[in-house]
Length: 119
Image 1: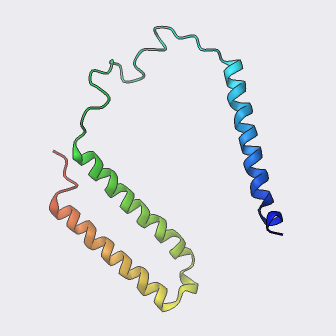
Image 2: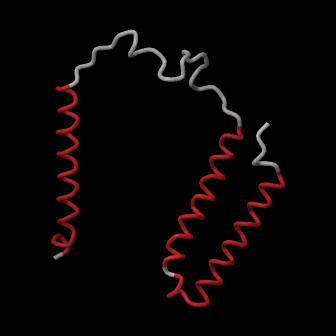
């Protein structure tokens, strides 16, 4: 009984594994590697890399990335809430309003601290 419920997932995983093997094998056979100077040169930026790949980054890059993720998650919470707003009732409305107020307070704090300033 339990196996019958999970058999579509098992079939999906087997088909995905086989298909990935076929695609990888086909690309290996159809496209042999022929490296030359042009293929090994810098891509689109116009100059060769001059630093080590393990060099330190400014902490602001990470801060901006984290802020982007936070505000992007906010949008992902707002969309389903907006779609089901008519069936949420008063509690759902107040809960999301509380969430938005906390998010705006956090945004104001980040703005006042200067985390959005780029020097």
